[in-house]
Image 1: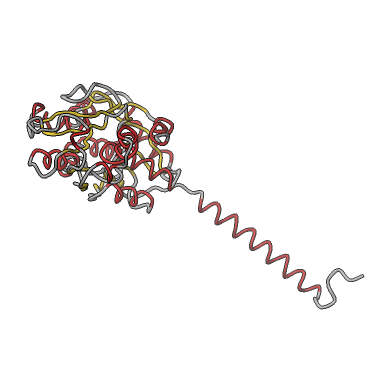
Image 2 (image 1 turned 45 degrees about the horizontal axis):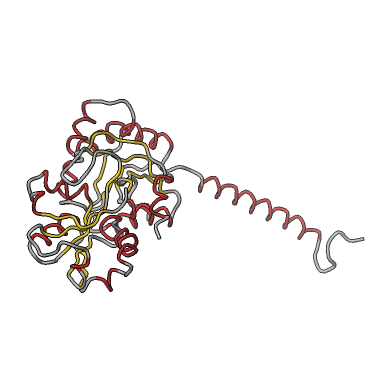
Amino acid sequence: MNKFPASLSPGWGRWLSQLLLAVSLLASSTHALAGQCEKPQRLRFSIVPQDDLDKDIEAMRPLFDALQSATGLPVDVVKTSSYGAVVEGLLAGAIDLANLGPAAYISARRADARIVAFASTAKKTGAFQEEGAFYNALLVVRQKSAFTSLDSLRGKRLALVDPDSASGAQIPRQAFSVRVNAPLERYFGQIGYTGSHDRAALALLAGQVDAAFISSSLLSSLVERGEADASDFRVLWRSGAIPRNPFVYRDQLCSAIKEKIRAVFLGKEGRSRQILLGRIKAVRFVPIADADYQILRDLP
């Protein structure tokens, strides 16, 4: 009995075996290459715009120096204009390390589970902020305005921050809408995005809007910098606790690089870290994990 179909010769069988072997070797090689870690020539760092972006970057200069010293890689700061742009940069492999807002992190993690949150900050007490690793979304109006209740804001002008901001958009759209039993677009007469928490607060003080949703931590920072007075604002609504902005990296980075990055934030205390913490108005860095942000995923 022939080993091969009548229409095929024994030579075809040897050729098929060789082809299958080549395909197997190619698949193994491709898998190995896909499994290789990334060791970039430069470490690309970005942050979501929250206050003044240039000031935020300058405040983190000690962090960039520490990262370069620890990893041996020059640190490039990637400037972006929106939360979404930082997320897109991480997903495209154009950014290696970033400081994201909680909602922006969830968006990035949903798109790629290899975006890893590893550290955050505990902030000191501020005008609108308790000390700790959590903050709140605030609905604020001008203290001298006629708005003294939520009901008085129906049909008025509202400032949000960015569609991917937890305290400046997403939690207001979820938790606040539940509180007033109406979506924001139906409750307020006009809604606009300012792009940052600072601009939302300053638009409010300038009378360009009647109310604004702002991070309790960032509003406190604005007051501490002397750009506004705590007595300028009246808080009409405060959300539940929100975990602070996570520092994240792409998990494709080589383990040695990731370990050195983590050590900069969570390793032994040093003078440079104290300088950095002072610059960003934080008490300490704290370890975090993806599970810490489940509270945001569980919002109605």
